[in-house]
Length: 289
Image (cartoon, rainbow, N blue to C red; front, side):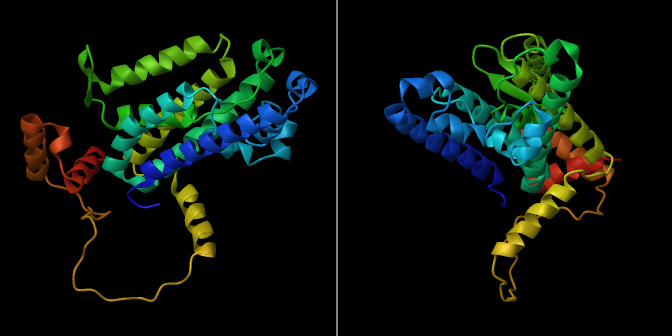
């Protein structure tokens, strides 16, 4: 995935949702009353192998579900995926624009892992949840909360212009999401909200460590690069006299105070959105001092 990683993540979620909806329709046509009552329809079987479980042994039996659940959503209702993808588009867009597509991918995966591990821990270690029915865990919400809190940690003074409300600091929006998730941990979708909190914590930790120079997403990107290398053909090296790639700031480069002042003046005049990718990267490098 290159600079369009955000679009690709959203497309994967939408494609999985559409396929699941088609399977659900087919399943409803061919299922017997007994299968519907016992939850053994074709769709239920497919979802079983997509969704995460609160049972440790079941998770060991189907370990891929700690990732696949973050690309599956409630079917056939469109609201779950719609609001998740909308949030990912807004907040994930900031992550991608400011620190790059590769870190958005790793944050999405880390958010999913943190969400399912928090879900597993609570339903197996906390007495309140042990005797409660857990159901299954599906949805990108944990990854979206990782992006929300990650963006708020990265850009605490950034503002979204909300309809009927006006400009609102991203930190307030993130705090609202987290508060709603905490309240939801004792309601009907307790498992999902527990996963939200895990994702939110991972987003804060990811960006906080990144500002200190530690990228905990490197193993994830390294694994993705390795898998891609297994399926991609080696390309011949070609020389070019023109660099058509987007300019980026050297990893070891530190912008001086005059550059930072110029960037801050530009923000005060035209807003954060007016900055180029290079200027945003310089601002991020300055924040790591």
